[in-house]
Length: 221
Ligand SMILES: N[C@@H](CCC(=O)N[C@@H](CS)C(=O)NCC(=O)O)C(=O)O
Image (tube, rainbow, N blue to C red; front, side, top):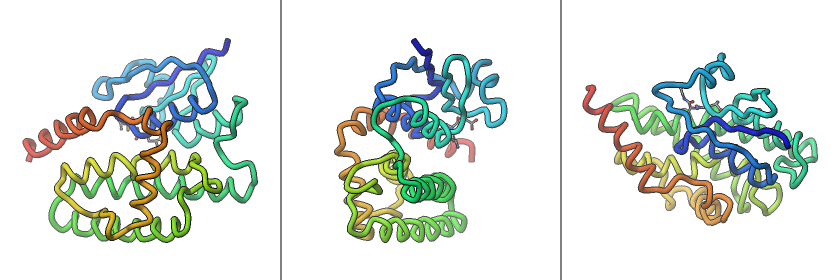
């Protein structure tokens, strides 16, 4: 049987994505929890460029970067396609997944850790990004394909779950359901799916973990 290992951390939205994809495909895997403050020699060996989780190890061969791993999983294992097969829909899905990772995740992460003028700029940037998502989701339950939850939605897990918890801890209200109802609906539908619910870190555990980081940042200032 193929040997599949996933180097990740329980609190990472990036490694959670991979777990969802492996489960959807019915692939058995071993999860190796990394300590990111003391990265293992194996992680550094398998991802010497970025030195980040997740890394998927398939029969001894490493694959890095979550979006690349998600495509690899789809191409390697049979079972339900996790990316659309139609080339145009596939390209559109890649576009949104890239938009989440390159635009939304960095701005939504940074706005919660910044202060003053920098935070005000980031709030405005996040508002513009949310407006884009609001219009992309107009008349749609999920990013899809069709009416169904797909890999684009799964790659939006940070926006749908982590960002809400971070906002609360930072005392911000960049996202509010009243301001962005389509995004709010999408978040509710997303968090209601059983495959998602089963693959999210528990809210109290994640909140406590992030709170320690907030306290450490506050103490260092
Ligand atoms: N672009 C990467 C991002 C992965 C990422 O940021 N991983 C974080 C954990 S959530 C990490 O390993 N950080 C360790 C570090 O930056 O040293 C992907 O999609 O896989």
